Length: 210
Picture 1 (cartoon, rainbow, N blue to C red):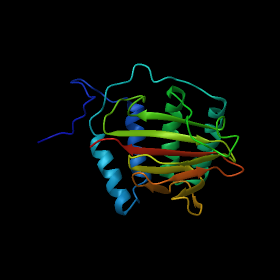
Picture 2 (cartoon, rainbow, N blue to C red; picture 1 turned 90 degrees about the vertical axis):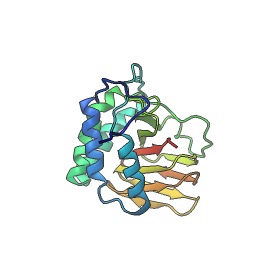
Picture 3 (cartoon, helix red, strand yellow; picture 1 turned 45 degrees about the horizontal axis):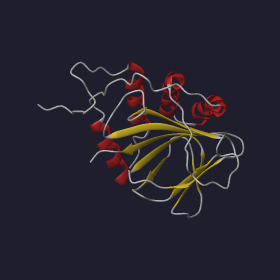
Picture 4 (cartoon, rainbow, N blue to C red; picture 1 turned 90 degrees about the horizontal axis):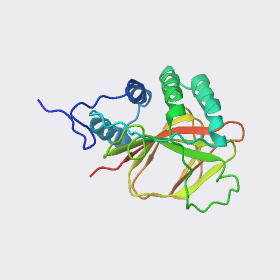
């Protein structure tokens, strides 16, 4: 019998129970994912079976926009499935411990973008738990804020907690509701924006392994 391995896992590594609960809720909430995205999530799940080392200093760093997370979680609980509501509760327990950061170096036509967004990593580099092959994080946008077009080599899968609009290859915007997903293949241009009334809150996974 073989078990999953993780370069960051030690011989006595044990996963934080709040992280374990969030991973289980994440799997349940996007159980309906199909096609290439389902395969992507399955690969990430397999890599995350072995817990990584706890990060001794992930933050926390807080910005004013982080106060919006409660509103995003409220939308997830009110408009999402029971599985999304459970995932929102798991994220709420972890949120105060996260090291929030702003994305630097992106050109944006939205003057509110610099102060109106924040990202945090739960698992992976700079996260609560270190991991080589997968990064799992959260993005938060204040109402009316657009996260501008950007791209990156790692494949990515989003699970939406509170609704917003998304765009790929600089095409038309399309809406995503709580519990729906977005699949970004490697190096595709993509952007997202929050609606006028509620923040956009979404969990993302990046494949950083080989």
